[in-house]
Image 1: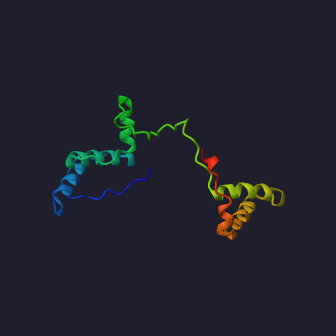
Image 2: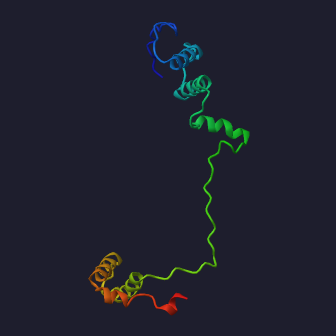
Amino acid sequence: MGSIDVLTTPAPSDGISGNANTIAIINEYVNIIDIDKEYTLKEYRSIFTDVYKAKTGTSKKTNKSTKKKSSDDDSSDDEPKKRTYKKKDENKPKKQPSAYNLFIRERMLVLKEKQPDAKLRMAEAASGWKTLSAEEKLSYKPKEEDLE
């Protein structure tokens, strides 16, 4: 890495004004950092996170370096919870198709010979449904014996 010009910094408490908690975090951070040592960004981040947690007594979302450290402990508390899904009832009857579904199914069979492109075939079938009158749409309603 290239050399960085080291600026002379004032003592931690000299001339700093602002939030008391922020000042305490900055002072602690400056006291921990060894000026003679070259740190990586990951090390800076880790030190700052530790100081922040110690001074505020809170823990924000865990970062990647914390997760790596805790993986040695084999504790599942730090692991994100997996989403659980309800099991599907295999005996549940299928929902009856709507009038639109029945029309599209019938229309797609007819249009399959004329239009090889499925996207255009579906568009043509859907526009055919829009042009049907209410009485014609009723003819595609599922029959009562089909519902049982």
